Structures are given as structure tokens and as C-alpha cells.
Length: 137
Image (spheres, rainbow, N blue to C red):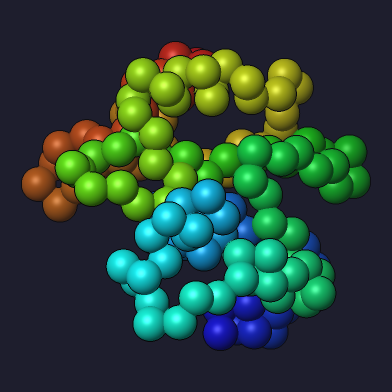
């Protein structure tokens, strides 16, 4: 349904960067935990293809270039609870992910913000990623 809605938007370029609630987009996670979230097992490949056949680009640690602008998308978030969700990594693992970001990237789209940038909750606490902040600083 989301791919249908997204395809109807008027934007020339459509990019999706999944995150921790997009279970089916994380094939490894979905294979292990699909029954926790669904009564029917579906295909992560088909889910991604649903976007691609509608000309919506899905970026999972990928870079694309549009009119000379380099755009990179990364879905990872720090594990914040005892249970696991899609695209979770322990905070110490995220440093390695962020070190792998491409040089010369013009636009970086992440599911988790860097510490101190758009990361406050309703109580004013910050929940961004310190390792990402250090990498993009």
C-alpha cells in the first residue's frame, strides 16, 4: 500500500530509506521474525520490487547520483530495547557502518539522526547516534 501511495506523489524522484519498523525490507531479520509481525509470510524480494517497478528507488547502504548530486541512504538504527527490530545494530557496531559512508556524498538520508540534529523526543531528551555525528561533523 505504501508503494502505491508513494508512486502517486508528484515528485519526479522518489527515494525510500527503510528503517526499524520496515521488517519485510530487512530480509535477514524478516526470515527469522516474520511470524512476530504477520500471519502470512511474504517475500522481501517482492516488497522491494513493489517499489522498483513503480520507479521508487530503495536505498539500503547504497549511493545513487542524480544530476551530479550523490545521494546515499542507510537504514540502520541503534538497538534501543531488549528485543530486536529491523535494521538494528548495537551502538558499537554503528561506528563501522558510518565509517563506510562514501566520501563526497552531497545528501545523506538515514533513519536515525546524528546526535544533536533533530533527535529530541517530546521530553527534550536526545536519541541521535553519537558515532554518526562524529562521522558527518
